[in-house]
Length: 296
Image (cartoon, rainbow, N blue to C red; front, side, top):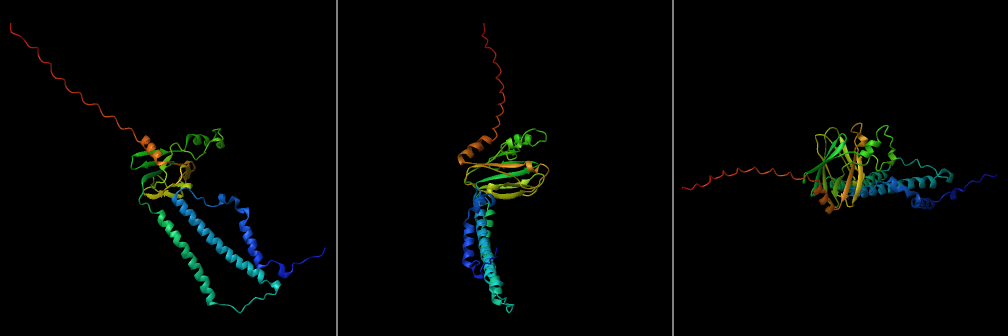
């Protein structure tokens, strides 16, 4: 069998490399992208963060295509088999150094502008319509609705707590939302800016619900704050994201986003019943009057 060698000029022309690159980007290889990429979430902040992430990602992809494309073209076009000879006379170029310094600076400044805008938006808790104090305990959460006086603890659901015990005989796969269910859900209204004040009672915890887009530490002796504004109703689950002790993995968070009308009804149902008024003190009865006597 004779050996065949590709002709030097027929290897791959630069245009073919560009075409192959575009075809590769357009293939169904991105079918599982949703499982790899950042999720968009259901809040205003999560959408801002997602859009910023995608903007920076595509800028980086563009840079990679240009840089690696130029490298590939140079290696193919000026390879030794085509008779290319290295030019060793160019050892310094002021123009080239200025260009490859200014271009990255411009790119970084352009990327910093939307990033700074997003950071400012994240820290802006003004005009909040509802404030909830969240306190982390080992290993549960306490929610205080400051304007209404409603407060309760949220603990791992009994179904998960039983299944996690050694020797329970319960298959965890048969438990719905295993280790992600609690006995009392945090409830917030949709399309409402909710301010969360986070602190810890014993050790450092972290309140994190991925779909809501934010995570903040709950530190004893300090108050951290964040805000969420969900634009979709539903139930969203998260967990403590700080190593807070041996039962760290059994400290889930469940948030129900409901309509404003339903939230009002729920809030009223959670308020403590008014204490019954004490009975009025008994009044002393008037002394009986002596019967009138008649003279014979």
